[in-house]
Image: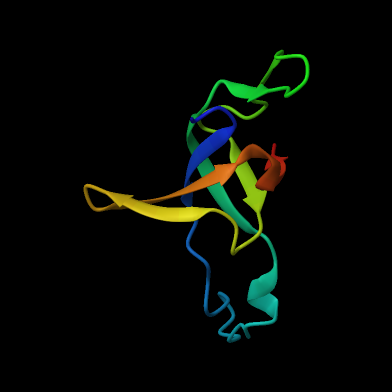
Amino acid sequence: SIFNYVLITRDEEKEVTSGGIILTDAIKEKPSTGTVVAVGPGKVHEQTGVLTPTTVKPGDKIFFLRLAGQKIEDEGTEYTILKEDEILGIIR
């Protein structure tokens, strides 16, 4: 089911800063960013059966851990599918 899953496009991670500094793997461990493309309706509480709606919406910019989610490709576009609880925050 797609209940609390979120489909995103990842922002490109920079290997070199605008000033020419090469980023090491340790620095690249910081959270990644992306844009929400689609969302499921939310998560159903196991005991009560009540649906808690998804809090992000298409178009939201988000933070998430770099290794979170599952990468997929559709018609040449790469997406990542995350559970909503893998999102660290929304960029406002």
